[in-house]
Length: 372
Figure (cartoon, rainbow, N blue to C red):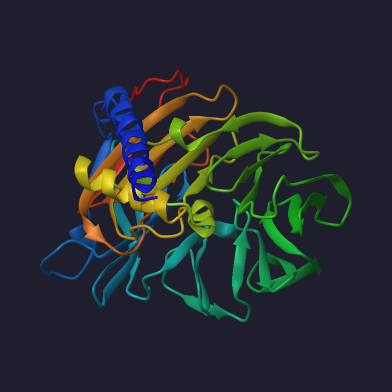
């Protein structure tokens, strides 16, 4: 029995070494893209030492962004204009908290949606703010349609100066747009108009699928963090996406379903998707022993800290990449997502370190990294 156990361990070690060596041999690091414009983030915070400890960024239009920053207890929410190749602050407020997401709202306004209430609606120049009575869970790309979530039920609203009810229902409202709602009820996913007319439905291969989102006007993106698909409203598959096609060899992509949802964004028409992955890259020997541990525990345990981030943009029509960016940093025990894609899909904004950088994307995604 001892000899059999030893042979099994040797086989597992050999298998891990073979897979690891194959990955290393096939990996190739492409040069990082060059930003079109940059802005030092420290200029958006009170004078102090050190980089921001929390960053989040979103596009409000093709040439304006909102960025939230915190350095320990000092925070700011700033509006940034991108004109003539330069980035400059146009408005700012100190009313901001770490751990929130920023969303566009109607009439040039924006709101922040935290994991815990309150949701705060800001005026277009950030001079005024108000707390909303409901906790917003899902938001359409325009910010005009939002939803309140509770276990196994949902309510949708038009976001104006207040929340105007549209309709409510059972299940999990996965994704709203200004015309459609995508609802998961058990293994069934159905797409409906805002007034309840059904546009299509299908069954998921597993109830464990973690994220379903509207992609443009006639497609959906479904992702369980190990495999993703682009489908129509009746589940017909247009394209399958595998993580190894989107992140670098030798690094570990974290596979929590909520993380997948947070790290995936698309242009307004759904033609381009941005993937923002937290990763963990370690020395070869450590990677081998961690792989053995993961195998021996059947994948039930593994390291939780991260030390890298990888951002990719993919064309959903041809499945090719048109942006490839990565960074490393000291290990920490929370996930990072610091990138946003513009409504047209023509540019990407990344807040990393002490820099906000804008990258212009190529007109055609052809699998190579070309930034101009």
